[in-house]
Image (tube, rainbow, N blue to C red; front, side):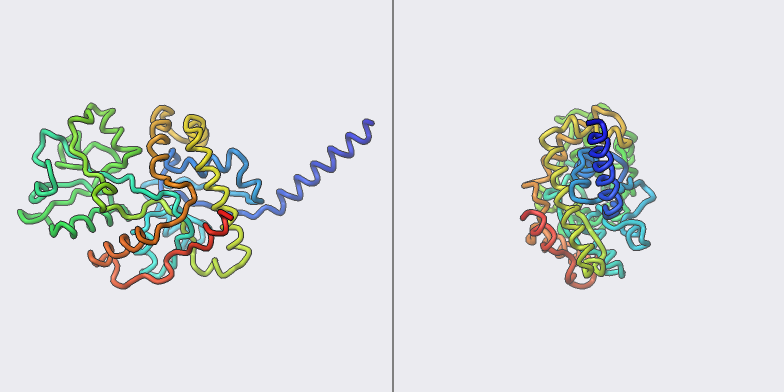
Length: 323
């Protein structure tokens, strides 16, 4: 009996070794540091959803000096998390990014202003200073200002743009009349800094119809010509959306998994996960063509891009992943 058990164990270990050796290596570059904004991917890794698909996924955290579009262009990643604005700009500049899935179906972007300040409505923006993130995050704001007919060059007939840090200090220190925040992150930093919800004027991009597509998954177009790579992306998207579904159903556990991967402040990660879950939509990762068209048009109107994008997204990966 002992010999039989040893043989079975050896066989199982051998099979595991073969599976590990045959697993496809995939590198994912995130747009920012480890946090619940990316919980679905960390959960996919932790729960073995990628392993089940025969994938060995390396998740690379981002940061203020990391541009995912540049990382993938330089061969440092197979797939990246990026905002559509930045991806379309990169595509026009020669980095042929293609959206293969859109886990975030709603925008989390907001502009917040103290209610006791000079700005109560959009009509009050003129002549004031507004905090905006750059590194590809500025495009929704500029498209919005263009829609309002406001110059972003300053002066009495436009707005002054403050290149904002990735925190709420410009509001705390009164360097700007309003600042950019995400519903799942900096908004709560403002609350933690002493602002009460009733003390803030909130301009929500989604509610105003000014939302542009945010955290999507992008690969290089030429890679999709390889059937093996394409099939691996189907597997990757399927496992990732399984991770997102699990994260939405188990937000506290998902936040703990993020903490295990370098996240900071468990209470903040749990709160973030709750807010992120509101943006995932139906959980299929499918891109809405209407929102894509609105995103592209806003960028064209602002002359952020100069020509109509072609081939910038595909539904083939999500359609196959959801079968």
